[in-house]
Each structure stands twice: as structure tokens, then as C-alpha cells.
Image (cartoon, rainbow, N blue to C red):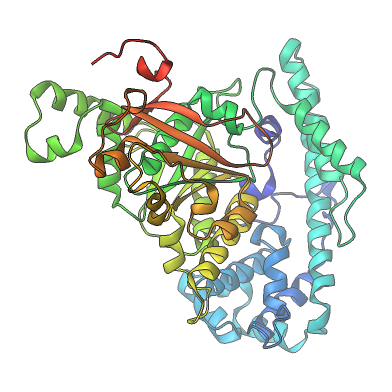
Amino acid sequence: MGDVVRGVFPRREEAIAFVDPGPVEGALSGCSGRVPPHDLGAEAACLAAAMLDATPHEDRSPSALETCLEWLKPERFFGEEHGRIWQAIEALSVEKSPIDVVTVARWLEGKGWLGRVGGTFYLAQLADATPSVGNVAAHCQIVVERWEDRLLIATCQRVAVEGYEPDAGEGRATFRAAVRAEIGRQTALRPKLAGVPIGVAVQESRAQLEAQPAGKILGVSWGLAPLDAAFGPLAQKEQHVIGGLSEHGKTALAAQVAVAVAQTPLDALGVGEAVYVLSGEMKREQFAFRLACSMAGVDAATVKLGAAGDGALEDLGWWMGWLAKLPIVIDDDPVDARTMARRIREHQREFAKGSARRADGELHPKCRLRTVLADHVQKLARLCSGCGPRADTKERIAAVSHGWLHHVAKGLDVATVLLAQVRRDVLDAQRGQKGRIVFPRAAHLEGASELGQDADTIAIVHRPELPLLEADEEVPAKWLDVAAVIPGKRRWGGARGLVKLGYRLGRFSEDLPAAARGEAHYGT
């Protein structure tokens, strides 16, 4: 939704980042020589307040820094020096470092930017001349409002230029829809504490639908039609959970989804889909090896033992070469959600500009990075740095889930997919009851209630043959090489009942064995 809008009218925040020294003012230089709207006094007040009140309050009320982090980004400042100072404050916040005039100056000096912002003298001036720290929210609002005004002016200028280019048919319709959606988005009321009239939300929703190219779904596909029917698409700003017992295929399913998304054909604007994968359970080379084996239909254990035939190795090599060309980023260094969001944002910018490169040096086409797959939430919870030393597992899982939803899914406008572990004790009920198959539910996830609060969909992957084999029982023919996906939560509705998928050597498919389809015979 809104992809056409971003393709026709790129946002300033996507085009400008205070990463390397260089002029940034003038990116939105005024119309007819006029200076764009801005308020340098409000910008300076925000920076000063963030440096003076950066320590969390004992009464848990938000500090000035926490308030500013909710409102501000480097590109929202008009003054180049203010944007660079704010980038320093953000970086120190992520690193959990003290924030004051001295530490900010040291960070800027390390980047070679201290002279460009006026040196330590200007930083000291900010701290000395700050208005009341208690008014920081009002100052942040002024900064954001001026930034929104500049965006609107730039959009109107671009629309005026684009409008002179003759076009017809679907191209003209797409352009008009993009104009309506972009202008509507930028002029819509920003939600206040009291909310907005539902008519505003309806207008925004209509604009998004009008901008959506005909025949496109409002999100990306899971890559398996039964899952699309059961859960809907992987839509932006939504969080999805794939749960399951160990070795039942949740990681394999997530990896297969990543491949399916990365294979999405380029749209009419020549833009594809990229995927970011956080693999904390396996190192990146292990993840790539396992994924290639699954796609090739090769037993990974056989390959590791050196017992795979030449044909299998040839197939594996071909699939490895094919995977290497996909726009997938693999990160095997788990961190907190806020830091992860900063990493992902950098890759979003590279893919959006068309400057992201493959390992062989070739450029990927322009892509939207709007799908992020994460590791087991329980593992991320153990690494949670924002929780106190006495926080229990549920508190840590809640912090991770909430952080990924707000900093990654909503903060970056992406769909997030988290993996979650099902408690092993859910199978106790079927032990001693020969032939009974027990399907886990969302309530059986570790931290079920905490995950359920933030998740839009919960899918539980289960292979009934594994528990039966562990109990030395005969597996019914209809469950051989079959995986069940049990809907645990569907916020937006979907097809009823569990989903059956074929599963063999780590790969899911829509083709079920004959017995699973209810046929009398069963192919060997």
C-alpha cells in the first residue's frame, strides 16, 4: 500500500541521511528562492533538553530524551548542524552511553563533524540557553510540523513538474492515484492524544487502496496459497508469529517465506521485494547451507557425511548459486529491537536507491525492504538489554515482542515474523494414549499471552509423525510427509480450520501425498 506513491514521490526522509559529511540544507530549498518553513529555536531547544535530561526518571515519567526519541529523526531538522547533533544523541542512546555536551562532542569529533556543527562552543551555548525542559514535547511538535510543511511544499513542486509530462492509460491513472494518496497522507491530521475522527482514517484507507496497482494484494505473499487464504498477506506494520516444537519446521517455513518474498516479480515501476533475516540460532553460513539443501531437496546430514551423490551435489551447487542472487540480507548478530531497526533502515535506503550489491558485486534492482524475519523470541528475550536483572522470562518476552512491533514493524513500515517455541510438555497428554495426535495451540507457546497481545497472526507448525515416531507408534498414512499449520490467531480473519502442507527434507509444498488427500492408495 502506498508503494506507487513512494516510487513516484520519494520522501525526504528516505533520500537524506546524515551519514557522511556534506551539505544537506537546500535539499528542500525554497520555492522561488524563499526559505522553507523552519524553527531553529525549537530545534535547539529539543537538542538541549535531550542532553540535559537524558537519564531515566525514578518515577518512570518520560525523560526529555525519551520524548524526543519518539518525535524526532535526523532528517526532520532543517539545520544541518542540528541534524548531525541529533544523530550523535541517537547513536549514544543506542549504545547506552551517557549523553551530555562532552560525550556528544566526542562522538561528533570521531566522525569529523565537530567543526561543521560549530564546535564545543555551540554545544555549550545550546545547553546554557535552553528553555524549560518540561516543554520539550511542544518544541518537538513545532519541529515536526515545520518538517511536514517542507515535505508538502516539496511534494507540490514535484507534482507540478510531473504533471507536465503527458501520459495516458494506466500510467496516468497510477500517477493521479499517487498524487491523491501522497497529498492526502501529508495533509491528514496527525493523531493527537484524543484521536482523530474516523473519517480521517477512512480517507487514508481509501487513498491507499486507490494507489494500489490493480491485481496486487495489500502486502506480500507467504509463498504458499493455503497460508495466504488462512492468514492473509504479510502486510506492513503487522507482526506475525510462527511457533512450533523443535525440529517441526518453523525455521524452515520462515526461510521459505523469505525466498518466496525475494522472488516477487518486479512491479510496473521496476521495483522488487527485499527481505531482512535475523538468524541468531544459526550462523549465516549454516543458515544458507540449510536453506540451499531444503530448496534442492537434499538431505543436509547426508551432505555433511560426504555420502551425497554427484547429482545431489550438483543440484545443491546450482541452488546455492541461485540463492546468492536473491535480495536477502542475513544478520547473525542479535541485538535489541531499537538497534536492529537502525540496521534495517540502512539496508532499506540502499535497496530503495538501487545501490545494494550482491556478493559478486552486481547491483540488485531497486527493492522495497518491507519483510523482516527474526529469530526465536525466547532467545532474543535472553539477550534483552532493556529488562532489569530481576525480570522473569515473561517480562523479557513481552519487552522483545513489544519492541519489535513498535520499533521495527511500525517504526520501519514492515511486516515482522517472529519465531516462537512451543512448550514440550504439551505432548504429555498424548503419551500413554496410543495413536492419539495432539495439536499444539497458541496457548502452548512460551510467553503465549505476551506474544498474543502484539501479534496479528499466530501460526503453529506441527508434524504429527514426529511425536508418534518418538513414542514408537505407527504413523497413519495420512500424516506421513505432512505438516499441519494451526491458526492460533487471525486478527483479520481467514479460512477456517488447520492447513495441511506437504513436507519433505525441510521444504513445504502445496502438493499433499495421496493419502493426505483422502485417496485410497498411497504412493511410496
